[in-house]
Image (cartoon, rainbow, N blue to C red; front, side, top):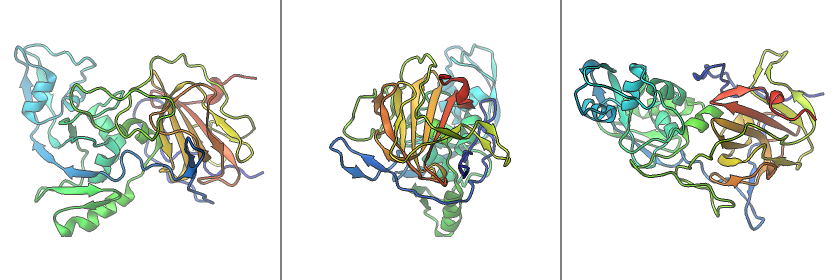
Length: 363
């Protein structure tokens, strides 16, 4: 019996909120290019993801590390705006929990470094690619939390080693950087090509930035096209899941005999078998940008619960679509790095993968 080659994630996350270093994707047969079924039954290529095709202008400011004593009337946002450091980065540096309350006389550390100013529509993934750094590193460095929606004008601290350009403003478009100084082109293209993408990156870094005070778009049933703006999270979720498909277990959760770590389970099923939403929620992603998984759908159930469905041969939902538990979202396929038709299924809670066997019905 052939064992699924893609039991592991490109990025697996251990217990805790900080993702582990990414492991290399296993080599093996690939069949990329799942098709999206439209409302009229046509099969088309999946839409481009929210982080692809936009232009990121690399706007950075060097901020010197210092201390600041809070004055009456100060807000963390105001301190961040005056210092040039992001309020989230200041909160993270001072271990301030939400709602980030400060009081007069309090001494705050202003973390020094390079800060990127977020523009309209930018996503975390695109920003990280533009500077050649890991988005998960930026999430941790800036203390970003749910719903991971950036705001226009927000200052994001860049990790050490970021490709910061100071001679002139550079731009980044698609998968290649286009700096104003031609000598930097090769380095930026190398960094962009080396950028790896995992499920956690999509969960935390695919929401386009919004203006201060603007609300994210609510999910709707059967939207005419994939939503390209920020999507509102669903309400509370009870944590009860259904089996997305029934079949023979190919690979279980956790460490396997070959030394790889599976962040979910892999279930063998016939190609074309409907894959069902394991719970109600909002489609956070539908596409094939993570090669190891081929066709992939991510559903946000609210309350930090996310489910992932990989190796799909057909996609029946789009980003921003509201789905019900048991609703078909695609079909079993052989896309990605696998040797036979199957479904890779994950359950994550607050970014941490958990064993689906502990949440799915026993019968």
